[in-house]
Length: 158
Image 1 (cartoon, helix red, strand yellow):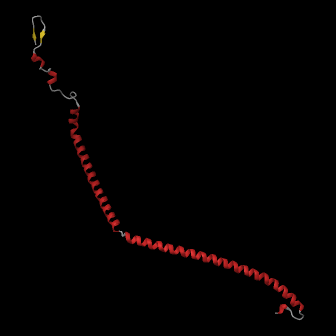
Image 2 (cartoon, rainbow, N blue to C red):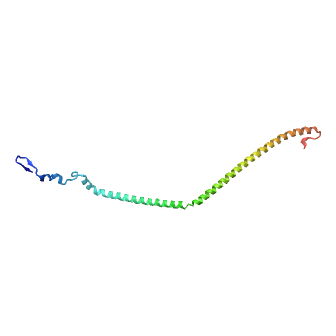
Image 3 (cartoon, rainbow, N blue to C red):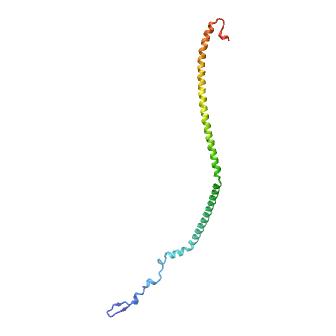
């Protein structure tokens, strides 16, 4: 900077391109005890911990890949098992069982009708028996009267 006749400083164009000393001088980051210094100080302790974490994550990844391969093998086995099942034989067995069920239902209906018929016959036999019992009770009274009229015969001695 130059001083002119009046005592004022005149700026020279070169001064515009010059940076102040504090801008171009390298500074310590965040002062003397900055975060970089703290990290440098903790680096020997952090490195083994980071290394152990990387090993644990790698082991977990390997374990999970093994489990996924086991699951894939099981799925392949199940798919083969399902594809080996003969659906045609199962369908034929189902139709055979359905026809058997229909036949048994028809037989069941036939037996029910026979039971109803036998029940009607039993009721008819009971009715005939009651009829004969009532007529038998009436006939002995008539016979007793006829027997009492004939002298010398005792109906109890027969």
